[in-house]
Image (cartoon, rainbow, N blue to C red; front, side, top):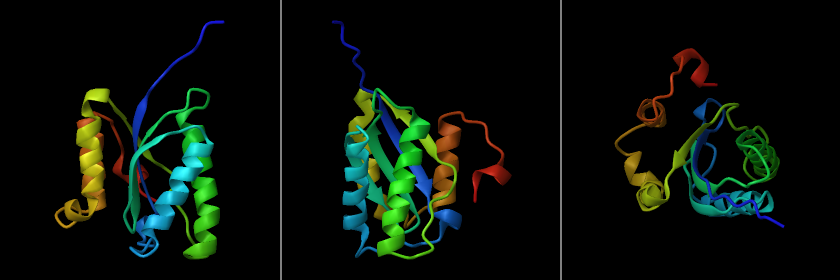
Length: 148
């Protein structure tokens, strides 16, 4: 029987609702571990992850059997339920997300970028960073619909 094979890398970026800083440095390692576990349960392998207080960068593989929308929806639902229990009862992710394709040859660059989020965000805020991604990937957007 023929096999269906794929390896698609995604750089996923989204924020907490209204970019409220909810994830403390103390909780970050547990939040990341839980996020990776949920991704794994959905068939996604995590290459790198860093959760800032108000947003996440996750470099992962796209499972062959589900869509990007299903992956993100299921991740947000599961992690929101857990984070409401552990962090704050009013925890929410923003409704939208950014997904950017990553080639095999750029994995190291993206991993390094994600690992250095703390230093990076001493120079640039999340909104500016996100707008740069949208422009770099030539994604047209209307500013009034990007944020919630």
